[in-house]
Image (cartoon, rainbow, N blue to C red; front, side):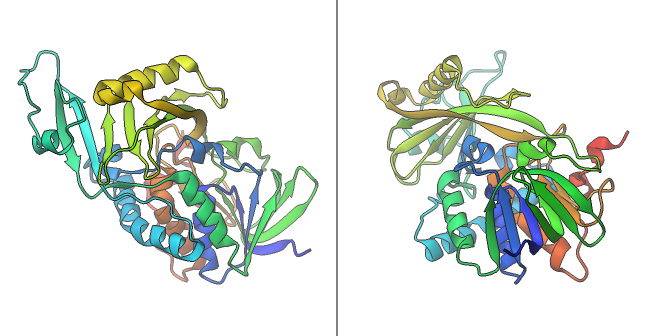
Length: 361
C-alpha cells in the first residue's frame, strides 16, 4: 500500500475535506487521516450560518474580509457539490435578521426603530421591545449534508486517499517532508502536513509547540416547524433560528468553554427552546425532532490558526481553531492553504491568523 502523498491532512471535517478537494483540483496527491466520526464534533455543533456581518460586525479586519470572501465563494461551491454528487447541501441565500433588545432605559416605541418592513415580512415573529437589522446577502447551509457531499466529491478524485485511523504523533518533520504515526502503528509520509482536526489538535504528540485550542461545547435542538421559503436566519442574543428546507428548525446554541463532552443538558435545551418560543410563539406546540451537543475548536482570541508557524518546521501547516465559523470560513481557508502549498509566489497569510501568535509572550 502506498503510504506517501504530497499532502497529508489530519481531520476529515468541513475544513479538512474542503481543503483536500481544493488541493486535488491542483493535481496533488492528498491523504486525509480521520479518526472515523460519521459527523465530527465541530461539524455537529454547527448550524451552518454564513453570516460574516452578524458574526464579525462591519469592522475592517482580516477575519471579516475572510468571512466575506468565503460567503462569496459558497454559492458556486454548493452548486458544484450538488452537481457532482446529487446531494443538495440546502444552501439558503435568504439573509440574516438580527433582533436586538432595547436598553431598559431607552424609549420603548410600539414598533422596532430600524427596518420596520421586517414586521410585515415575518408576521409570525414577536418583535415586541426589539430593534431589527436585516442583512440580505447572508445565507446558511446544512453542515451535515455539506460534509456528506464533500466526502462524496473526494471519492471521485483519483489522487485522493481516505484513511480511517487516529494520528498519535508527528515522528519527523523537516522543511520539505513530514511523517506521522497512527494508533495502529502505521506510518504515513508526505511533503506537507496540515492540521485540520479542530479540538483534537492537543491530543497529538509533536517535537514542536502546538498553538492553544480551547474546546467550546455547544448544545442545540431541531424542531419540526416548517417555515415559508425565503424565511431568513433569525438571531437574537444567545439564540438563533435556522430554517431547513426539510421542515426542521434548528435552534441553538449554548456555549460552555473548556467542556469537550458530548452529553446533552436538558436544562440548557429547555432554556434554548424558551428563548426561541419568545421570538416565534408558534414553537410552543412544535414537536422536537432531536437534540445534540458538539464541540467547537476555539482559540483565546476567537480567530483561527491558518498557515505555517514560527514554532514548527515549514512542512507543517495549520487550519484549525475556527470556533463557530468553520463552515463559513472553509472555502477561504482552503484557498489560503492551497496558495501556500501550490503557488510559486504565495501571498502572505494575515498576521492575525499566525498559529504562533498566542504563544508569543
